[in-house]
Image 1 (cartoon, rainbow, N blue to C red):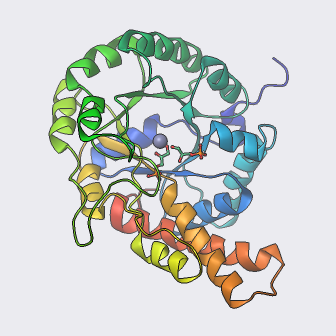
Image 2: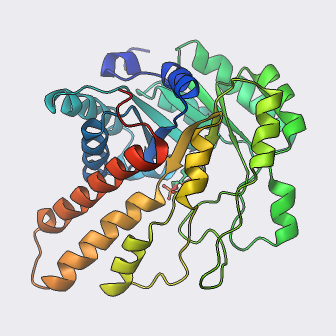
Length: 326
Ligand code: G3H
Ligand code: 13P
Ligand code: ZN
């Protein structure tokens, strides 16, 4: 159709070269969620400064928030900004947790270079059928597709329920083979949000199930694996939020050493949303607590953006190993 926008025209790339490099060189490509201009600027600035490829990802609700008509232009702006900063980097625009074929198609037709179809709540057969439908459409436009097998644990889940939600490695080979999907999100103990585990003070969160990951790798050697729910819930931001009037007492995330270990495996994409939210919120709370009369959004969104730049650089350099790969 005449009004469609395709990612190649925006200067974006799909994820295939990124994942091949990540697999060969033993790092993970960061996938940072964004909803607005300052988040996008912070992510781009941090990734350019650390010379990292990046997946810019948008959930369905983020797409509504930013407006679907605005998003391709924000993405084109991100590409232009990286060039203006003097170091263009590979950038993908990715739909996070796509809930339907129609949403995936709408994104593909409006500049996304990668989509996730999240059929993890469906039966195995239904998940395969839906994923296959999206793959068939997406591949005609050279758009990458991510799917999910297993359900990420939520904090309310009982231990038994959590177990039954882990990805079953014996299903992976058939799923990948029959769907033709490009990458697969698996459930090995990560979870979404800032309250991932209930741990007592001084206790470590339960380790990720690397045994499941290794079993998956054996079944589909060289196939790109994705980790969702991978924020560390960085304690310095939680402490700052609590210091300046917030209340996030039991917030806890995935320890960094676990993520570093994952980057050495077939995990090629690591999703980070909560840590970016925390960094920005901490900075905004500090500015407003110290300057109660401030009402110029640039005076608190600017420092929030700066905090995100620092967080992104830190992640790329010290956790994901994606720095100096672009
Ligand atoms: O995995 C979900 C992401 O953190 C996006 O969350 O739906 O609130 O934008 P959202
Ligand atoms: P976090 O909530 O751990 O940042 O996970 C984000 C995510 O998985 C987005 O899909
Ligand atoms: Zn997710």
